[in-house]
Each structure stands twice: as C-alpha cells, then as structure tokens.
Length: 235
Image (cartoon, rainbow, N blue to C red; front, side, top):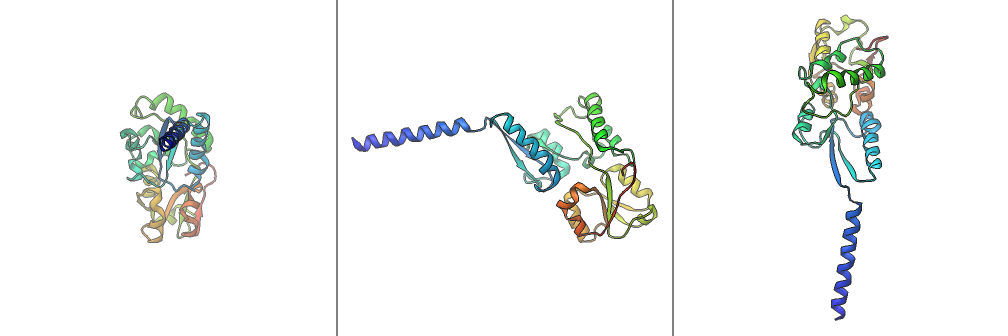
C-alpha cells in the first residue's frame, strides 16, 4: 500500500510539473533566418531587438528562434523563397540578391540617388505600401523595409578617382551598381555578402561595395587597407 501511495504521489508531482511547464510554454514558435553572423550589427541592433520586443509584448506566448549565417541551409538568394515555402517563418534578406524579381525596389539601388538613409527608408516603405505590397510582394507579408548606410568601396589598392577602378574585380551590391562598375572599367563579380571575406583573402575579388555596418563582422578592415567614401549622395 505504501509503495502504491508513493507511486501515486510521484505521478501527481509529475503531472503537476508537466502542467506547469505547459503553462509557461510558448503558444507559437517562429523561425527567423538570415545570412549575417549573430554578432553583426543588423541582427544585434535590429532583428534581435525586434524579436525580443515581440516575445516580451506577448508575455512569452510567442517565441522567435534565431538562425544566423544561413543555419537552416540554402544560400542568401534563396531566403525569400524560404519564407514563401515555409522553410522559415521570418527572413531578413537583400532584394539585390534576386535581380529583376522585384524591379520597383531597384529605384533605391540607383547609384548616387540616396542622400539620407532615414528619409530613403521612409520613402521605401511608403512606396512599398502603395505600389508593391499587392503586386511584386503579394506572396509574402513584408514586415519592414529599409535601405542600408552609404555604400563604400573597400579595396586592396586605393580608389581616389573613377579611373582607379579600371581592371579591378569588384563585388557589386546590386545589378545597377554592377552596371556602374562596368562603365568605370571594373569587372563586377556577383557574390552574397558572407562570401566577401573569402573572396578578398583568396584574391577572387580586389574589392567590394558594402556599407560600414557589416564590415566589422566580416573582418573586411583586416583584409584590405583602402576605404573610399563619397560626399553627398551615396554610392
């Protein structure tokens, strides 16, 4: 009888513990996938902050699992389709990885068009909401749009005038930037941002166009010594 009572007590304790854990378990768990390392500025200062606020505002009912550096598989240009196909619930990506697929967004990739990234990001969202949401992006729910900071050349040899680009192999950030590189005499090389460090270290490229905010995580300042900024409107 004592053994039976002990078993009943243990069973009751186990049931109570299970019910307690269920009470605190998230009702919804979402997978957020993106291509930058977890310590990079965009996940650290934007994506994780947003996800933390969602979890807090939902009192723990919503949990967002974060998968940096393409940990769920695939390559950065596949992120949009991963969201559409349900491989990930939330993705952060760059539309320049899929040139021609979202043509209206290329307005914000025009060289020397953006002067103020804040104003451009606001304009981007307004234009998306009015002209893109129900057309080019009808297959996904867009949570936010923005442009990055000013584009900068990071190169092995100095670039002080456009002619200095002649003969260089440069990783361009978008189709339109690649067109600019061609006009300058450079050879544009297409590759996602995570491939830039290896490309620079192995000499596959002589330089890259990326904003300052991703250079630290990619260790670009350790790989090249020359950085060319532009006054006024950004590259």
